[in-house]
Image (cartoon, rainbow, N blue to C red; front, side, top):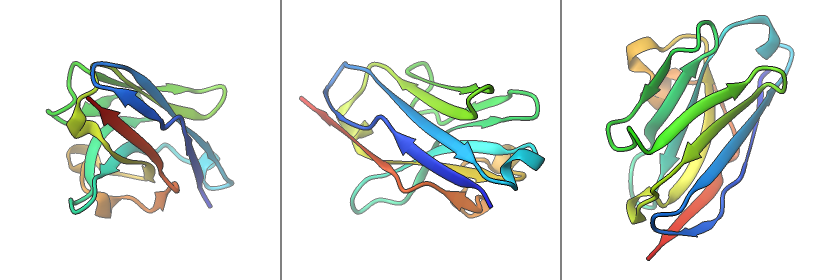
Length: 127
């Protein structure tokens, strides 16, 4: 079992910053390397991959829409995944989810690759 718990969502003005966190735990989690990813879903839109990190070697992946503004990182000691979001835009408003997959690679942004999901944390960007 893998448990993922997100936190850090909030309302912020455009241009501002937020840091999301995802605490990972579970017997299965500790036995393997994982693709840990952040997805987001706005009302009426499909869930989209934002960023991912492979715990095996630290490789990171980003959607074009967030490159240069968002940074994914991991605190190994605390088994926590972070998403630092800077220069936030109105279109970043969405529910943000943490997800885990055993393998993904270049398909990291496909939600169907992920077996475990958190409950989500809301990010609202206003003008």
